[in-house]
Amino acid sequence: MLENRSALLLAACAAVLFPAGLNAAACGQVKPDAQDALIAAPANHKVAFENDRVRVLEATVPAHTKEPAHTHVWPGVLIGYSDGQVTWSEAGPRKVNDNNTGEAIHEIRVELKTFDCPLSTDLRLPPTDGIIIKDPTLDLALDNKYVRVLKITIKPGGREPFHTHSWPSVVYPTLPQSRRFTNDGKPPQERPEIKGLQVTFDSTAQPPHGVDNLGTRDYVAYRVELKPIKP
Image (tube, rainbow, N blue to C red):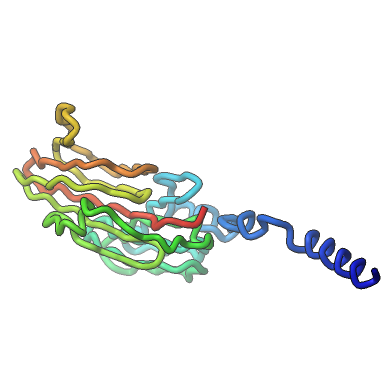
């Protein structure tokens, strides 16, 4: 009887100390602090897009100026605004950035709010995935355990073949006039030229589609695909 009471007592203590769902509650709960980039360096950062999965910052450091020390609590993807270079950036503090060059530093930072959530082991993609079909307009710019970043480049007059996207994605395009087409019988969708910064988020899978570049410059878009997390 004493052993049974001890076992019940231990079980009760465990329920208090380690309640069900504790891991789920802790997942995605990292929050910005007083040294966050928007607070400590507001002149250099502004929010281009934000939801419960990501925060997208436009970061600029004009020539011959200093960016104050600040912190990024979430890791993320950096995309160079002018050179298109794609890199991975860990979370953590940043020192004062002295831009003593003659050119401004201009980047898009896609921060992952759910980086601490358990990742799914099921990364299967359909045979219509752009990388699987070897879409010639796609380049795999970055691939790690958190994200897959695709760079789409369509030359003037060129066409992107039918393909699909399966994972939630941040989309950052710099587009000439274009036309999006699908294989569901609906008429193609004409899209005007995009001028300036535009960031969107695809929360659901994208069915088979392609794009015609109707403009006189390259169609360029970056798709930051978020690899699935466990429910």
